[in-house]
Image 1 (tube, rainbow, N blue to C red):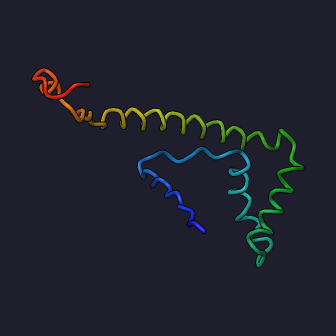
Image 2: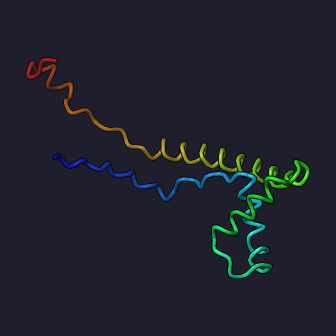
Length: 111
């Protein structure tokens, strides 16, 4: 049997912007502390189930403030990504090639 090699994950850049949150996550973050006060002692997953059920039965009008927050957060994220990529392009150093043209001109290397 051969051992499978595990791929190593790239380390995340700490300077990279945080992802945008969806409307449901904004609702969940607002609702969870209220639910914890009302129903203490439930498991984490139980809170998530209750919040998900509430989200499903909410009307579009009730979801509208959270959708607006998500839209604003998406715009923030898009702008931060653009700024982040601009910073990375500015900070990138140009690499010198492995060969230099003076060797080619001198007849030392043929490509």
